[in-house]
Image (cartoon, rainbow, N blue to C red; front, side, top):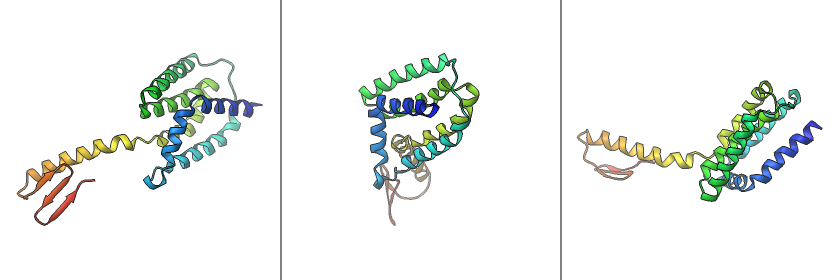
Length: 170
């Protein structure tokens, strides 16, 4: 009975947040861009979760703070879905899953299961948002280093033309 209730809760979570989960899956299915790892991390998280599920028990007293957090994060997820802010949707969904563990189980039990759920943070494709920032930081650093040397160079964004060849910061 415990497993049926748990499966029903997770399936309802998938139904409610279908658009966010679908966007994540579409992003993960881009094999040519090396983001297929999200599906493997999801499988690993489910496996780790299943190892610990036998030792857990539901609690009758629900954690009110976790439930309020789930409601607030659901509103944030809905707002970010309407405004098209994908990274905020993904982070809100991750936090909803973590807080759901604290509302279903006692705090001590949830501490056992959170590492299995916490690995899902690596499924969120943050590199799409961080790579342009890292690229611009690399451009600034290389431009600074080349400008302080006696090397003749023409710097155009992330392309550096030297007398002996061309470098591209990627």
